[in-house]
Length: 573
Image (spheres, helix red, strand yellow):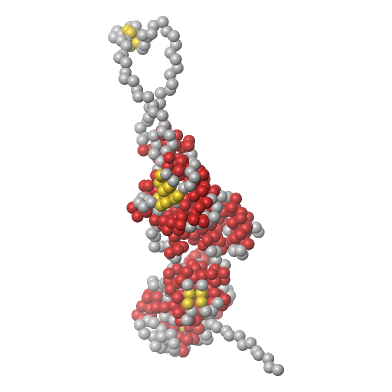
């Protein structure tokens, strides 16, 4: 009887397989690769380098490529060949007498530094080679260790180069400030989402694997500027399914929160429905999502809304076309002040670390979301004060007080009695001749009755809020402006970004008929149809949108409308 044996297949991680071998291969560091390459080519290489930046952006890799270029026999134009025996040893981190990598986190003491100083005193193995010492996590060295290295950094032996890599250069500056002046400092940047996505596409092309563009962008955003983290995440997804990379798999493996969750929360915030926050958080946790991961995505989503609210055509927002339309619809239902306050509150909450310190993260998450949902009421008060203040500033001249209702004149034996002017000699005043009667002042006109559009806007807002089953389209509906009602047809004007979503909703009678029935009941009609009118490409001007928001604010606060009329004010943004 034969027994089959399982032979495990081990594959080198993508982050190692596709680590750059040349300066030209560095991703997103165009200010560093050409500089180091030119230094090698011209022979003006410094004796000590300090590579600073976030993790996974190429600091240690650049140090290795520099060591390869200095010791490569086939070096050309400052670039190493990357394939010779010397380059292979250095690139793989293998044994090399002339290039030594040290983890400063585990060799941080003064004795380790003294040992390094003694080893650096020896010359390279040949006259045409360099000794390169690469110290990773250099900020972990103690103050005494830096003091032990200071002398050799001031007077280094010939053909000896130090490369310090660190994520926290401020610690070195505080603990060993003299070292900073003896090193050439290079600050590595976070790599953009576009550059990381391009790198992932190149890797998958070499691997012969197809991927959805949205999936690679999700991995790139999750990496937060680190190419190594992105490749490690891609490795993790490929271990689940090796023949393709799909967005659903990426979200499942990396624990990412679907954008539908954020659209749903924005709908809750727009409706100020605090009661839904608890069921929203319950569903979020029941589906296995991490609160910290949700808040990280919420910050990105709020930023995206704010950018689109200020500039709907912004190129800095990296979204797929269908996702962009959904975020445009959500942004149209809010004002920038709301989004800015929400972003500020979220940033303060994350900076406090309350979620990570708490033993009940669910309660912390619910409290934060409740604060974000009720924050809009504070914005309305600010808008009210700003509007009143803006109106008074426009007309600084004092207004005469309105005449009070005069009380009945007391009975007098002399009906011609009036004010007396003193005589020319200062004596007793002489009675003045009665003035001719002034023209009768026009009677004050009664305030006009509320116009029909205000009533229509109120009916529309209430119908949208009460109708269930609208889903994410409710945000688009609230971004529409009621134009008028003729017979049984209610017309709307909408921004260009909302038009497609609303037309699709109105065409779906099963979803939109409950809204029509609600509107018909409120307006006393047996039936009602809703249509979108064209106006200059379907886009409202900024002035029209501002006037619409001001009218909506006054419709919801009758006292504000009375104050505006009484004081002759103008509501401003």
